[in-house]
Length: 102
Image (cartoon, rainbow, N blue to C red; front, side, top):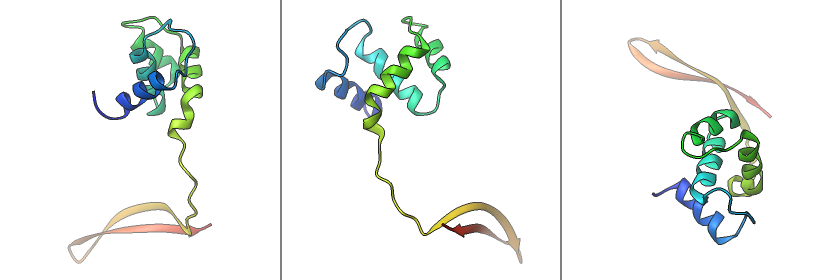
C-alpha cells in the first residue's frame, strides 16, 4: 500500500494520535482519507461499515485530530482564473481564460 493512505497509517501509528484502540489503524486511515478527498462522513461510514461498524461522527472526529497533515501554506496570487472556454478560430482550437485581479 503506497501513497497517501500508507502515509496516514504511518502517522497514526508513530505519533500515537489515538489513545484507544477500538478501531484498527487501517480503518481510521481509510475513513480519514475518504473524508479528505470529499466523501461525506455518512457515505464514509457506510463504506467502512461494510467491514467494521463505525459512525459518521467518529470519522469527523478522527479527521479533525489529524487535519494538520493536510494543511498547506497560503500563497498570494495576483491573478485568479475565473472561467475558461474553448473557441475555434480559422479551424484551430484555442482556450480562452477570463481572469480577474484580487
